[in-house]
Length: 384
Image (cartoon, rainbow, N blue to C red):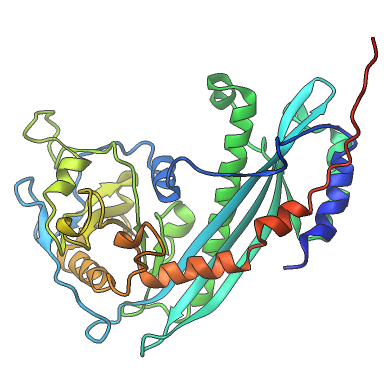
């Protein structure tokens, strides 16, 4: 990607026509309090807090039989996973802009995605990658006037900087529930993540001719949207996930015997086992959990566990044999591990770890990117 200073300088010059309150101490990176995978799970499955349906057949699960053994099948036995896709994002708060009576945040994001292919001998290579630089600002009633928006469009045209309106969808309850500034910052982060997922989806196309029943793609995180559900031979694997899900195991009766929260469910999940598959998204997605590491290897019951999601065809349930094969191959991926280099080592798949590194190595460093931000702001002095 070209040096960011060329595209940012003209953009910053236009924005400097407004009153700008730069971020204290200069532009700062926005750090998520919630793990990105868990945040995606919360956002994508907001209506799936209580799970009452199984999505598995042959045999049909019961609430007394919710764990299945999945002994590891390693690459020489079953080289099921050949492609791995991950996305990454860095978001920066540049400052607050003021135009007339409107104040709004100015956000910059680097987004990227990479696809790693694994050869028969186990060697990894970068098959494809994409990255973009986003400038996220509200328009119209919440932000820039039409005239300023046109100026920014002209300044960013033909550059590597993509201008995004953070009010392209109505704010509605977001603005009512929180301060407008916080709502706009949250919306900017959500849009940046959505654009990152678009890059991931685009990279899936680079594997279309090579995916089949015995050559599948692992997508880091969740299924995310209908756009991903339509792609065959893909499984989504999340390193972290929402912790407030309640399972009723096929029972509509809300009794203590039929209900378990996710912590109790996973505390009882043995090493190299999976839970049965549950239904989500109105029967369009099956998901389950796999314990890749024994509990005595980690310091918390939910560590060493991944969440698996698979799109279902026409509402058909997944067979137990298919879910077993997927899970056994995942258990076989537990080594090599990035222990000591990533605090998520206990549930990381090494090719996904390498895809993540490939993206981040192509990002501009914070020093280069934020060093390109030079606000042309003159102090406004008033005398009494």
